[in-house]
Picture 1 (tube, rainbow, N blue to C red):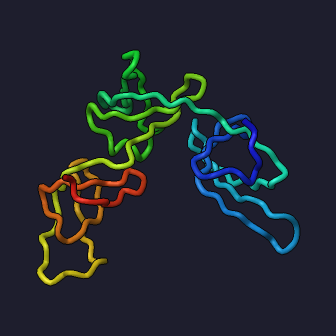
Picture 2 (tube, helix red, strand yellow):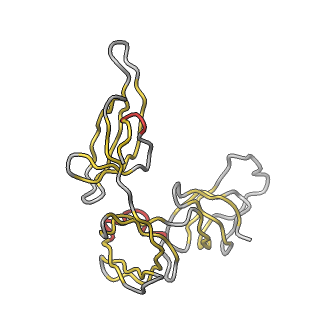
Length: 187
């Protein structure tokens, strides 16, 4: 599907220079001379290389249609992560390098989606919020009531985040997987 160059949004996948690229950051720029353009930071979905491109509104780009299917995370074996299609029970293995930083949030049996292009898996989509137990944090200091006084905590998966002072070791908290930030206490 063709879209205007100025219609690209973060997260859009486009076909550009014989590859599939995801828009990471965009910035609208209106120089003093000449027409406005969109400065886009692109990341190659296959090899992870980055590229900065300018797109004018008069240009068109091909937006790629990715298929999303539900999968279940099964296990990790060395550098490979194995997932099972919840409909056909077929297994797919992806490298940790392809999954990237999202691998730290994977739990055995976890439901997620895998994006693929022409039956080639490219990316995993985690749930926006996941629950983890705090395994280590500093004790609460009495009188520390300022809203911005967060303290460091280490979760069961080894991720270090900042939590409010009332959170303690052994408590479960909800974490935003996009930003790796504390969201709320788990129910």
